[in-house]
Image (cartoon, rainbow, N blue to C red; front, side, top):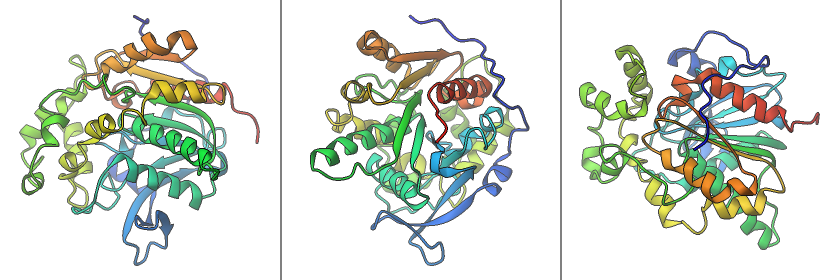
Length: 335
């Protein structure tokens, strides 16, 4: 077992007030997206509108990918502790169905469609190089993009994305045999019939019980925090997304050969650095870091741990920000 990192300090991290959901979404924008064309389009008359937050020169931005189910708002507590937009340009992505993005009920939510959106955003804003910072289920979007780069290269096509400076994954799925989600969370949610999805989360008491697994036992979560999370998920009548998008673990297992972290790490480890991390009391992906250490530690994979539950972004925002800043600073060169 690796040592826990109880505290991390970094002079490049900046403290500041944590944004409320209202402030967080007011600081971004909604842009048009055509999922059929896999393209960002004019917002007016667009099939869908998705939420983005931009900070600094996006040509070399760090791409912050959201976790399930809190979306980009999960980064709200981390963002004040990160370097400034000058020192670290940032792109915060929100998938269809999450946060302030549109939440269509008849949409085929999947890892593939999330990756389509991310690649469309990169193309539209001309991102030339990026560090991928993924939390929770966005690890699968990273794996899907890395696999696509290989497949495109094998076909003699452009790789379809910016140069990658590094890959940072925290509390995310890496191996198909490493998922450990409590039965009363995503496993049962994905089995709900379509007609029942709209009622998910309507009872605040049941919602609180279900999401309670995301925090560590010793972390005191207030009703106000849980209600704010509930409100974020309920924007644009979107609580049904909890069930509609809960199949990402099954999605991963169905594509185990394509989206195996070990295979992709071996291919790319000489091209850019990787860091994977996990929380000591993560109820959802706590086995992933142990497996990564067993299978890839001798190959040089960097592994970090932090205390707390699954929502490290909520419990350990300063420590997580310091890890991200240190990782990015370790290989960033002036463009």
